[in-house]
Length: 150
Image (cartoon, rainbow, N blue to C red; front, side):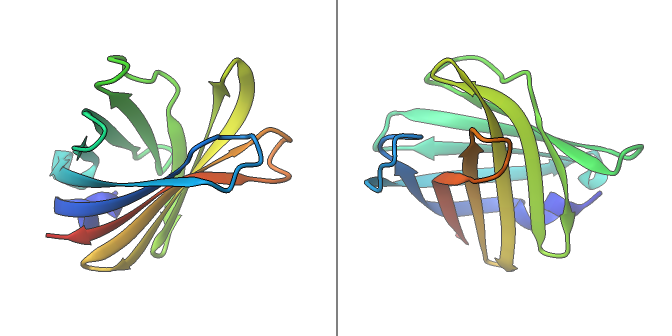
């Protein structure tokens, strides 16, 4: 239940996001971020706020551990949209890798979404997001965040 304890603290984040998602694009937009994360419920909850200074908006992540299922539910909100996503990404860690899945809609079409968290060491980690439109046969990674502890 303490899987996200590694993320507590302040992080400099290098974001890379596909300019055109699910369009066969290989053009990436790279931009900085600063994330501040905290742990709650003795490690069974984790919150972070990330600022994207060159974009002019912030993101907020809420992670809650369910001891009955031994899985995490991850919720996201952005100041650009002003709503908390109601469909969580759900999954767990095996060692230093966490995989989380959920159903969503992108530009009016249903998608499967995947988050992968990789803990590299105590001062570096990576998050990536990918979408699938073919029932998880193939994935397009469309956003990565490489974080370094401040």
